Length: 89
Image (cartoon, rainbow, N blue to C red; front, side):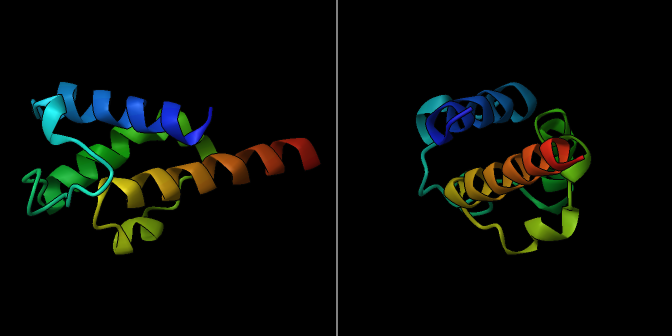
């Protein structure tokens, strides 16, 4: 999955889970200020992302996430780490 596909999947998760209008979701959108995602919602988001990330999920990596682009980057890196772990096993 490339970053654009990942962004589309995250957009879908945000829309389905939090009923956020997809037109409000863009890479520069701030989770808190623009999308009204609070800390409890952030935990729900991580739970929704777990199937994409698998065993390489590291919740602490999300501490610095502020925008949708940050989510894409963190999830993409974790997915890549999961692939590397799987291929090196």
